Length: 298
Image (tube, rainbow, N blue to C red):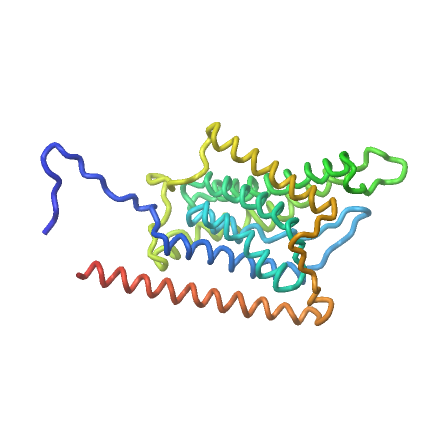
């Protein structure tokens, strides 16, 4: 029997974009696992040095961008950088302690803002914009902090001989290269294609409604004074941790360097852990679907 609201009382329908606690955890862990696996792959990609600047793939931005575009941007954005810390830095023995918080805050903020811009993941330009905004915030804030450390004097700069202003050129070139490589080539282009292909197909497997323009995600970043103040606070917080690391504060340092001791073959340990966690997520999603189906039949 269908329940009807009493006369004069407006019935409030549940928000299809609202998530349960278990679904939020699944999004968080899935984002963490996939980006951790992607960062393991980048460890074996070659790097090229052009004078004082290194040309490399900072990260495969399309992986977390697809996650924040398809699922809730907050939980996906928090999980992605943690995956790099857990599955790459900690498991490979290259964890710089409190210095890792700088990158965590910058990337989380960039992904959260970028994912909040996506209303309809099937629209490629929205997803592409999200990728470029995420990398712009992450690498832009990081570059400003790096130059600030040189200005303050807690870190030495790499100058080009005879050009004292070269720190600006070096940081500028590094930012542009990261934006083009990570933000466009390995970010906007593949993310726009994958998000459109996966939209509406992967969400039901986790018991979630696909995102659409008519039902904005609750808890997304908003263009108001409160969020802007929070974003500035997070940027300043990342700068504080960066300065502490530059000042040789070693709290939480973990650097046994397993790769140097055992070779690149040790990467398979991290891969095995990622796969095990991923399988756990799949089994959990299936169990939740069976439980929800049983409840609906009752």
